[in-house]
Length: 391
Picture (cartoon, rainbow, N blue to C red):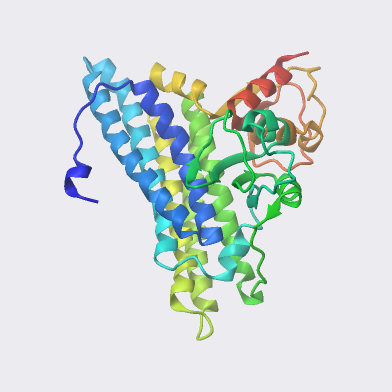
């Protein structure tokens, strides 16, 4: 890229719109980065690097607009949270770009790196729409894949990549869909289409490496969502948990590095082994960004009203709500609520009395007066909020 293309000049910009764009695009970029690594897709990696440059430019506009909005010390205290959030979102997008660089540098070929994605809570898929598919001619909104099935279409490969396609985008024969969602839903869709998912045989000696890396990825994804929740609802307890989890991720990454070094020998190429370590390091960068967001709350800085409004309007958001006794989900296990299958919404934490439980399993029973933290698409979040409040 030429130097003149990197030059940034101030443009009148809505801080609200910039925050919304950065929030939506940063998480999308991470998911696309994982897909690029999983499928070793150089073209997708290049597209992701373009996306990261876009976020970098947007971040500068946010910082300049935020600086202009500061008129007095009270404004400064509020706006610093916006600036720090923008910096954290930029760090997350930088981490996504590093995932793309793993592909371009040849670091994404180790078989255990592929198998890690078979251990994650949310799965990624790639499938081609055949001529006979009922999806041909339907818009994404009409398919109900996101709201009724619980699958997110992250991108479509046609003549060119369509990243984060809108609901009115009409699907065509031969489209390659990139999806994310529960394992059962990804597998079900892949069976209806031409499945291009990668399945590789594992290396028994690297099973511990796979377990550690999957735990790191799952933990960092939860940390980001918890950090958003702590910020929106000004919850210090949750913010402190995020910061504690950041230390845990550091420890897990050290264990990962040592395990890779122990298992790597003459049979493992250096670049492939380095890819496993690099993936852990990138996740550690994301966990650091999540801790930075949580730190805003721990330091007692009030979230700016623009920041709160932005999270009320983004595609993926976080909900903290109390379960009303007698509501439809009172007395049901997380599995029985089918929130993820019905609304693409996942419960990531529950507070009962004064104690928080993070990453509750599917057998956990929800009871009235529990406080839930859930994450998902805005439309699904609204449905879950209604279910929790309806007695």
